[in-house]
Amino acid sequence: MLFLSILGLVAVWYLYRWYKESERVSDKGNKYVYITGCDSGFGNTLAKYLDKLGFRVIAGCYTENGEIALKKVSSERLMTFSLDVTKSDSVKKVADFIKTHVGEKGLWAVVNNAGVATPSGPTDWLTIDDYKSMLAVNLMGVIDVTLSVLPLIKKARGRVVNVASVFGRISPFGGPYCVSKYGVESFNDSLRLNMAPFGVKVLCIEPGFFKTSVTDTVMLQNHLRKLWDRLSQDMKDDYGQAFLETTLQELDQRFQQFRDGDLMKVVHCMEHAIAAVYPRSRYSPGWDAKFLWLPMSYMPTWIADRFFLQYSPKPKISVL
Image (cartoon, rainbow, N blue to C red; front, side, top):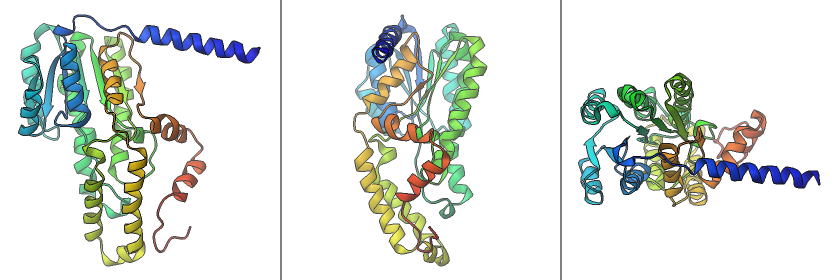
C-alpha cells in the first residue's frame, strides 16, 4: 500500500512537471536568439528548427560554406555571420551588430554551442599548446561570447544556454576535452547565481554521445595517430604499439555502441531552454548520459576508477 502511494505521488509530480514545462514564451517573432557553431551538428539543426518556430535567429558560422548552406534552407528572418569564437575581434564584431540591430528589446538568448574535440589522448601525450587550443574554443570562447552580449540578455531578461557535456561531470579519458567542459559547468553555475537577481536564466545542456563532427571516429583516430607519431621513442616503448592499436579499435567500437544519431534529442532540450516559460537548470539528453555517465559520476571515486581502468587499454609497462 505504501509503495502504491509513493508511486502515485511520483506520477502526480511528473504530470505536474510536464504540464508546467509545456508552457512556452509568447511573441517569438520579436525574440532574437544568437547561436554559435552553426556550420553543422547541433547548432545547425537548432538554427533551422528555431527559424521554423518563428524566432529571429542570428547564426554564427566558422566557414563561408556553412553560412551559404544554412541560408539556402532558412527563411529571410535568419541572419548568418562569420564567427571565430577564439578571436575577440570576431566576437566583438558580431556583438556590435546585434546591439545595433536588437535595440531596446535586447537579446532573448545566446546559445554557446561551438566546440571541438581534438586533440584528445592520454595526458602525457599532449603539450600545453594542445590544451590551449581546445580551451580557446570550448571554454574561453563560451565566456567571451557570453560577456559580449550579456548586457543585452539582461535587458531582455532572457536566457544564456551553455552546451557542456556529460564529460563535464566525469572524466573517463585524458586530455583537454573534459577539462574544458568542467570549466563550462563552473562558469554556468556561477553565472546562474550572478544573473538570478536580474531575471536572467542560465541553463546547461549536457549531452552524451551523439553523431556529429565532434564524434567522427575517423577524425579522432587520425588525430590520435598524429599524437603517437610525434611521441619520443621512450614514450612509445612505455606504451607499446599494442596500446595504440587497441585504443583505435576500442574507440571505434565504443562510439558505434554509444553514439546516437538523433540530434533532435539535444535540439529539443535546447529549444526548451530557450522557449519554455519554466526551463530546467540542466538537461542531459542521451540514454548513455542518463543511465551510465551521470550515475557513474555520483559513485564513490574508487568504484568509478576501477570501472574505467578495467575497460581501458593498458600501457606495456603497466603495474596494474
